[in-house]
Amino acid sequence: MSRPYRKRSDELDVFRALGHPVRRKIVTATLDQTQSFKALGQLVHRSDATLSAHLRILREAKVITTSRSGRSVFYRVNRRSLRSDARWLSSAAGLTEGGS
Image 1: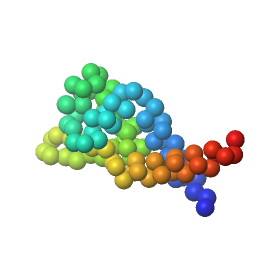
Image 2: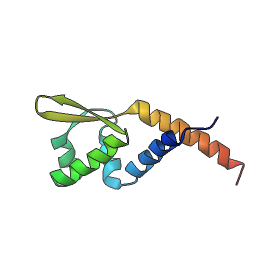
Image 3: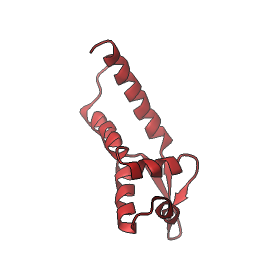
């Protein structure tokens, strides 16, 4: 079964998003609990602008989701999206193991 081009592009966005160590640290921190912007800033020791840029990339790749409480924004891993990408990667790896 072939995948639509857009879906493959989305999956490649996930790999690009996870390709930076700061973003991987953010993902690890949000796997089991929701984290505030402030908590993530303290964790990664980056400026607010840099942290915002990393979070935007993760959101656009659907790796994390956001929720608001008043003026505060909270972040959490989007497990459904990551599971889908993991299945795709596993399937792709299975196709290439015997092929090349």
